[in-house]
Picture 1 (cartoon, rainbow, N blue to C red):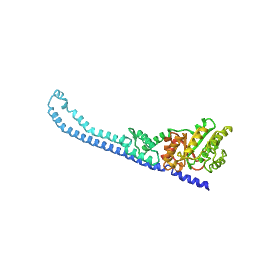
Picture 2 (tube, rainbow, N blue to C red):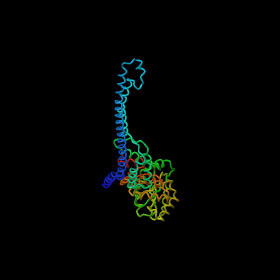
Picture 3 (cartoon, one colour):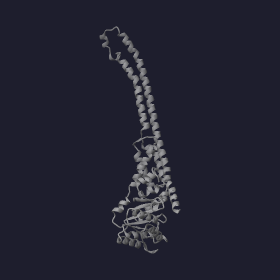
Picture 4 (cartoon, one colour):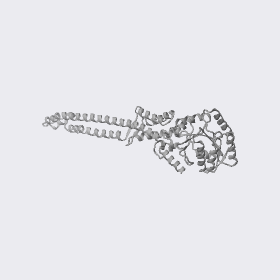
Length: 411
């Protein structure tokens, strides 16, 4: 019954995945669509004015032709009684055969030009328009506001806007029934560029690294760090790796027992010391155990801490110095938004992290932290937690995230 309730809760959360981001994005799409429609309308009006002007010129030419033709007929009448030689000696301008031809050309020009203009108008209105930098001021402002209201960090929002603007300015854009598709494609490209910048393939990393691979998990209290360790353990076990868990959180009451419950559920060895012991010693012993028993990966828990806690941060630096982890993973909640991004940045300054895991992504309506954290820290997001059970862990792929941010795939 409890598991069923968890599944229902997860499903409900998934429906709201990045919903705020999609909602805010609509303002940018509408602003750009409106600007494109405005340019198309202006081009159509200009084409119409040229059309009217040419029609007017055409009528004037026709009137002039009619005014000229009577004298030509008079000349012909005067020359009836003349000899053929006299006719042949008449000036070219007065020769009768040329007048009908000129009249025909004058009558046909307006029609031909009108047809050409209609084709030009159709091309502009139905196929493509060129966006200039001045056209994008309002849409880019709408985009920046949408990103910031979705908890995207300011430097990241500015970078995304630059990418989108660079893609749009000076290019011919096809116009279909939905001009919002132009906005979506440019934003999608920008997000993929940002999210792919520090990408790390976790599977390839584990495969090629010397065994045992030592992974240390850090973060603040209550963000799902210990549960994330168990999820990563399950993920690795599914790929046939052997795993050891290290109960390095000797500071919090019940932390060792919590990890032991996960270890029992997964059938894994948990190396532990008593509460209040030296966490560096616990993790060191776990590594030695893994070496002695040919285990592939050591996943080490640590006490949750804020970057402002000087004693605990000094302790973390000691753990890193003693155990020399291959990868230090920062864990925080996606729903924390910019707070998570800032905490990741500060942790990275104290003990350089190798990557991040964002938990509770299934409850994240904004998506800002998922976009920002890799850019700000310069280190990749490795996994996204999307539920409360062991399989509810998604290996981070830029395309997967962008599809859901843009509403192009099911949560």
